[in-house]
Length: 181
Image 1 (spheres, rainbow, N blue to C red):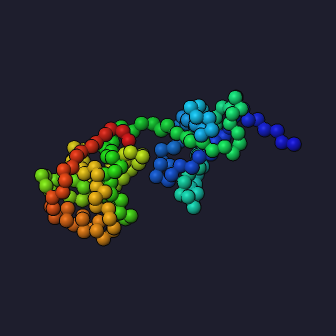
Image 2: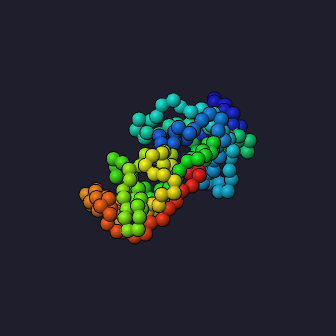
Image 3: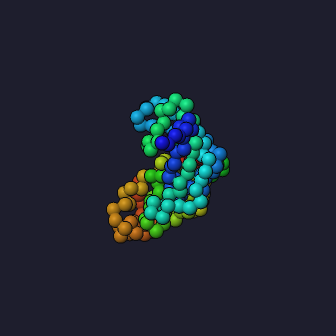
C-alpha cells in the first residue's frame, strides 16, 4: 500500500535554454489546466535543476502548488507562467523584425530616405512578441519591422543583404523600441 499526501503538488516544467538565466528559486509561478478552464493556481519555484537535458536543451524547474481542493492529480499536464523580476533600461524590438539566418541574427536599419543597411545583432532574452537587443542597434534608430520579403532562401537572403547594404531602395521602415520585453 502507498499513501501519498496530495495537499501540495510538485510540478516539473521545462524551460528553454535561452530563458534559463532568469529562472530562480522563490519566484512566483502560475499554473492553469486545460481541463479546468478559467482556474489558476499560484505557487513558487522551489528548485532549479543544475543541468540541461541533452536532447531537448531545456532546464527542468520544480514548482510547488497548494492542492487543498484535490483537483490536481499526479501526471497531469498544465500551462505555467514563471514571473521573473522586471528588467529596466533595455532595448527591445518586435520579433518579426529580426531575420534569423541560422548563423546570425540581423535587422534592416534605415540610414536615410531610400537607403537601408543590414545590421548583425547580438540578442538577449526573447518572448513571443519581442527580442532584447544587446548589441548592433541603438535606441531611436528606424528599423524595418516586416522583413519577411527577404526570406526566400539562404542565397537570396545573402543577395538581398548585399543589395540593401549597397543602398537599394525598399519600402518605408518604422521604428520600435520599448523598455521591457
